[in-house]
Length: 144
Image (cartoon, rainbow, N blue to C red; front, side):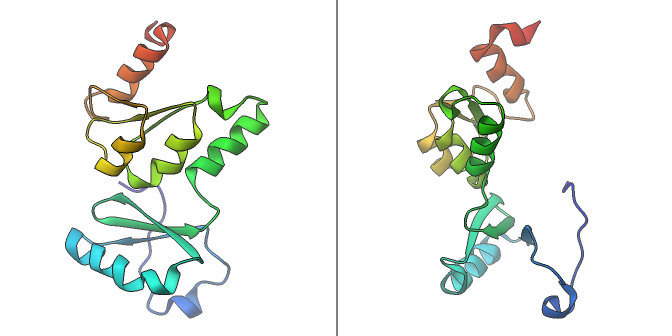
């Protein structure tokens, strides 16, 4: 499911030779990973950003690395205002992108906090074709 190489490290301090862009903590038990997040929050606060990309996946990045900053950089590159951008997401790690875009859309099965920040909620989930359905709604030419 993840589009990256995953490795189990016996001693991360010795095996990681350069600062990672992102690291993920994956645990099939959502309650245990939530406890891990809360227990480590005092150690990471102000240094690392922690976002859940699913109930069983916790992602850590530098504080200034997030999808909203990425959207802003892409808009700067193409010389357009983020207010003209559309962001569509379903997980906590999409929040900054949803807030940065002129139109933020949360999938109907998104995390509740993301839905509360979105301008719109899709009719369908991603597996049901919600991304394309949303594009058709906001940009009728996408259907052709």
